[in-house]
Length: 242
Ligand SMILES: [Zn+2]
Image (cartoon, rainbow, N blue to C red; front, side, top):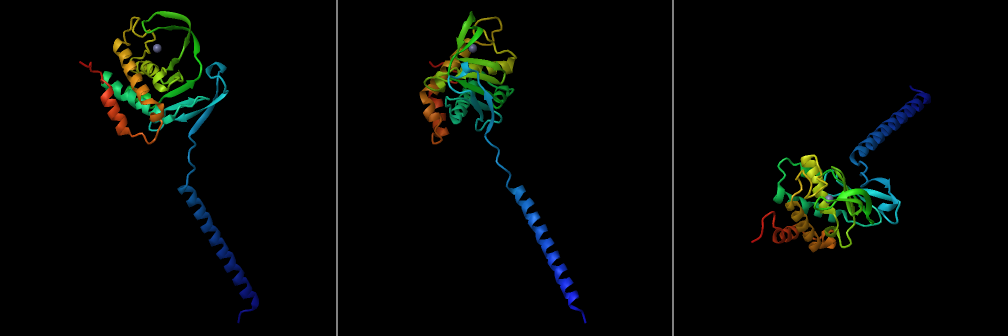
């Protein structure tokens, strides 16, 4: 017969084995759960220090992704500009751009999907710039800047995106991406990339964005079908109306 030591040892080992199995299961469940619930990525990408001239009050701003575009972000300071309103404005811009000028190579679409938009509240002074007819102006106060092929700065429009230089700067970036030149002399100068049609396109697109207004552009309940039908009845899509 076995002595009590035998039973005691068996019970002890069985308990230890049971405990070890439980621990292994717990670890397995834990690591399994970890895989299934990854942490959501935060929407704000990073903060930047602002020049005082760029915006009256804030010293810091945050960068936010624009919905439905791959890597397109905007930097926000005190001035509130709705990401959804920007997304829809980009949509209107692109649809109308394709109708007027086409985008066979997809470079404009690619630019819109990889764009950095900075908004400010005050005009910025630049050493020199050209007016729409290509005349050079020194120390000019501007409401928008095409900084790099995928980077623009825009002063917030008093009455929404349609009253800002948003569309104008997008045209510079579109030309920059397609022709390797933003054509800073606009309709003037010698490169002739920016034509009268580009100026007309800007006026038409801005008028429509102003007509709809930021309040509707920013409203998630504002239907995309409604937006498209408003575009249909207001845009010439490059055609000259009789
Ligand atoms: Zn310009």
